[in-house]
Image 1 (cartoon, rainbow, N blue to C red):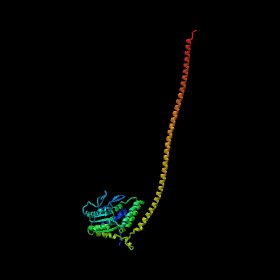
Image 2: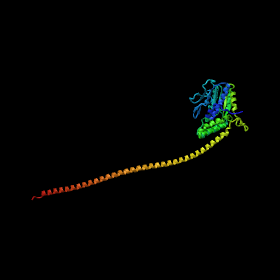
Image 3: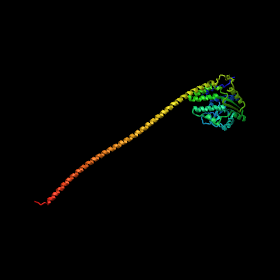
Image 4: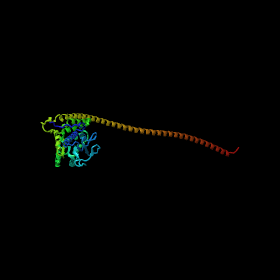
Length: 407
């Protein structure tokens, strides 16, 4: 007997374009829906996908449209979007009548609902579903928490950013699988759970993808395609990152889904040294290929980081030289400014000297003029004295002549 997933026909494009963990989730939902279709004899289901809007690097998209192209699909999420078949809404308060949809599906949404609202979220999904609810989510175990912590810290250091979904997992706390199976039992809803997303492969792929985003971004979608082709058939085993809960509302639905999914679940990876790997058929153990890829990329990253360190050291030295050069240039500018100031002062003194020289020349001219005037006045004064003396001498003679007797 072959154990593992047989990829469904018609999903080749999705396998090439959808991230590996998203492909695994929706492929499992598609298998469960097909089992219900066969059991119920319904050719075209009405489906509600709660939390099904995906923000890809190319923009918002509805992954469910790739996996359920022939069903009547409604996707509901909390953000605005004008994509066909999408409506904005709250999973804890659905505006639909009871049993409005044949099936309700939800993938990786429960963990993003605050803990106090999760029971109401489940009640709403069960209320609007006629035949059952198919819910996938990561569930809390010590191994899952450690894996998420490793991934969160790696992304933080590698890409210098905080992965918001993982951050929200910590803030809201991941749900516990047994608690929700007990909850459904209390609601008298038969439920079963199936593991998917082999934890070690999930963590290895996540580390590879985020390493590739920094070192070789164009290879990141190729890693998804490679995983979807080679490792996806063997990912349903424990320890698992997530589980699918099948909540049955119509008798026989759970049994039909179990008949389809149970054979795809591999024995637990810790089931002992005598586990029969031949049961995996043609599927290669992920470790034989994934780990060498991880080591190769790690080696490349180490070389890149060494080059980065060397480059940073060179840049640091260049920066120091630039700082020293800028200091020298600043000193030169300061000296040039000082010299310009001194030149301005010298030019000012030279101008003052020229003004003083011109003034001295004017004073010399004035002095010569005054000297000539003084000399002229002295000459005039002397002439007048001579004239006065002559006049006076003539008057004396006339007076003497007047007093002398005439002959």
